[in-house]
Image 1 (tube, rainbow over the protein chains, first blue to last red):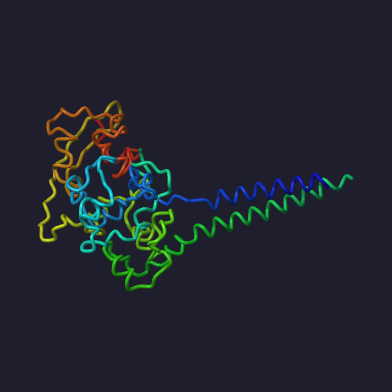
Image 2 (tube, rainbow over the protein chains, first blue to last red):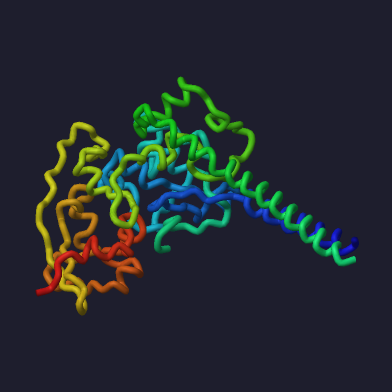
Length: 123
Length: 206
């Protein structure tokens, strides 16, 4: 009987652990998404996940590169004050061309611990 | 005495089945939102610039507005349907690897990306010039098409910082490409992956 309880406990324990793992954070991302995390997490915000695919539908690469963003991850010194003053993302995300940067989680949507660079693909 | 192990084994098996079913149900509910999103796009997906108006006018879900006094909840990047690539790019052409074929997408008039932030700027005509790059060994040679590249990019994006504009002046190799030089500045990171060999190595050697 004791063995049975032991086995029961083991199963429930394993099941619980499995449940925790399976219900844990899932990373949804798309190829060419860029993680921007050189400052975000140090300043207490989740990393930014920039969806290239979404912007590519509306704009050619040459609209943003290299005039607004240098084409190398980590080489753009972006921060929120620059965005609000109309540099980098703020060139469009200012309420005229696209939405204002007021809903933080819209961009700061990455899981903590992501490194700057492509989310998928070669790092 | 002889039956008990059998009975406990049966109990254990039953419990395992139950837990397995529970786990499956959990994962099922987790993957349900995108599946529900996939059924919706009978109406055309909203334009990228739409979110401002849609969040003001349309039905608001929980994540439309957030409490500015609290920090955002980290989570998957695509909380809303108009940010879900499975919804927006449902009918986009894919290449042999299953990645979105952006060149075919603009050739088929599926995407109409803007040329500039200045909407009055006339489009620059793409530059139709193919370059044959010799490949190592038995690998078919590479045909580099300027046309799709100049559709998306300006000359200044690649020349002269990534590629010197002189025949033979660029010591391209696959190792360098994997390490992010030459083609690898974009391919494998933001443009189609380098695992798709035959999309570049197209011209068999004589």
